[in-house]
Length: 221
Length: 221
DNA sequence: CTTCAATTTGCGGAAAACCGTAAGAGTTTA
DNA sequence: TAAACTCTTACGGTTTTCCGCAAATTGAAG
Image (tube, rainbow over all chains, first blue to last red; front, side, top):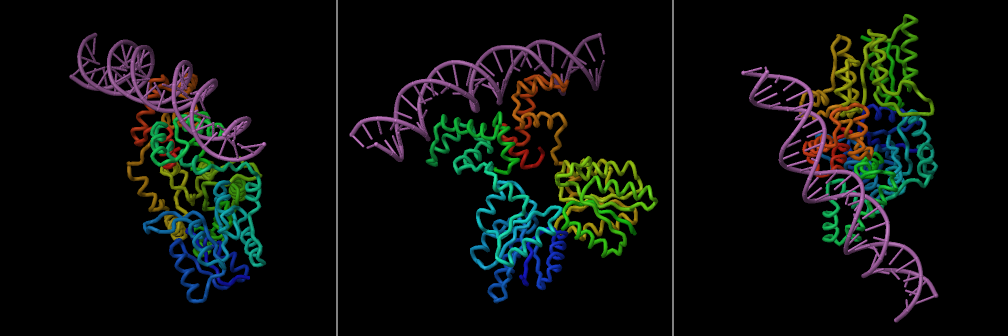
C-alpha cells in the first residue's frame, strides 16, 4: 500500500474528499497542492531528499489564477513526472470524459489510472488505489466503453492545422498561400476545399460554422 | 445559525467537503442528495412533516445518469423551491462562472448566495453561511466583479437565436425562412446578413467560422 | 521502365455569402 | 402634420465557397 501521497487538485472541497478516501485506506502521509508548479516542486524535492512520494493523485484542469504557472494542466504535470520520476504512480482524477481527451491522456501512458469524479468518485478512487498497489492499471468503467469503441475520430496533424486556420478566420485562398509558404502539402485551393468537404461529411456538418461548432463541442479544436 | 441543511450535489468528493464545512460550523443535521428530484422530494416531505430544512446548498450542473430526472439542473430546482418554500435559504455552490449564466441565476433571485467551488471554496461557503444567518445575501468576490462591469458583451435573444442557427449549419436563406415562419423579426436576408456582419465586427472576427470560434471560446454560445 | 491506382491540382460553373446603396416602414420630435 | 431619424428590406454586383470533372503528379508493384 502507498504511504506517501500527493494530491494535486485545485478545488479544496475535492481535496478534502480525496483526503478522506486516503485516510479510510489508512494512508499516513498526505500532502496536497492546489497548483501544478508547486506540486512539481514538492515531488522533485521529495525525490531529491530521498523521501519520494509513491503516488500522485492529479486533476486535469486547473483554474487559472493571479499566479502564472508554467505547468498549466495535470496532463503536462503528469507527462513531465512520468519522465523524470518513472517510479511514481499517477492517478488522473478528473471530470473530463471527452473521448478525444481521455484517449490522448490514456494512450500517452502518463497515467496508471484514470478515474472520473462523479457520483461514485469515492469508490472509484478507492478501487484505483487498490489496483495500483498490486501493480495493476485502472480505468474507470464509464470511460472503458468510450475507449474501446473505435468511433473516436482521430484527426491528422494536417487536418488540425487546416482547421486551426479556418477557425482563426483565414480564407481558403489565404490558407493556400500559408501552406505553400510553409511547404505544407497538399496546398492547392482545390485540395483544401476537398479536405474541408471531407471533414464536413465526417462530422455531419452542413457548413463550416457548423463544423467548427461540432469540433469545439467535441473539444477537438 | 442553521441546523437542518440539505446538500444537493452529485460529486461525492464535493459532498464530503461541504459536509466538513458544515460540521466545522457545528451544524447538526446534514442530509445530502445526489439527484435533483430526490432533493426536491426530501425538501417537500420535510416541509410537510413540519421539520423543514432551513438551508439548501445546491450545485448547478448535475451529470445525466441512467435515472431520468424531471429536474435536471440546480437552477430548475432552486427556482421551483423558491416559489414553493419561500422560507428556505438557498446557496448556489458551483464552478459556473460564465457571466451570462451567473447573471441569469443571480438576477432571477432564486438564490440567497452564489459561491464558486474553486481553490477557496471552503472559506467562501463558510462566509456565505454566516452571511445568511444574519439575513444578508452573499456573492462570491470573484463574480462580483464580473457582474458589476458592464463590458460583459450582452447579446440579445435575437442575436443568440441567429447564432444558434448559424452554428447548427443553417444557411442565411434557411434562417430567413425559419425566422419568417416563427415571426421572428427582422427576418429579411438583408437584415440577417447585416446582423452577422455586425457581430463579426463586434468580436473582431474575419469570417463566420472565426466568429463561432470566438464565441465558443468566450462560452457565449 | 511500365502500369496502375491514388492523390493532388486546375478549372469552370453554380451556390452562398458579402457589401454598399437606396427605397420603404415605423417612431420620435418639433 | 411634417421633418428627422432609425430600423428594415430590396436589389445588384463582387467575392468566396462549393462541387464535379479531367488532367497531372506521385508512388508503389510488376
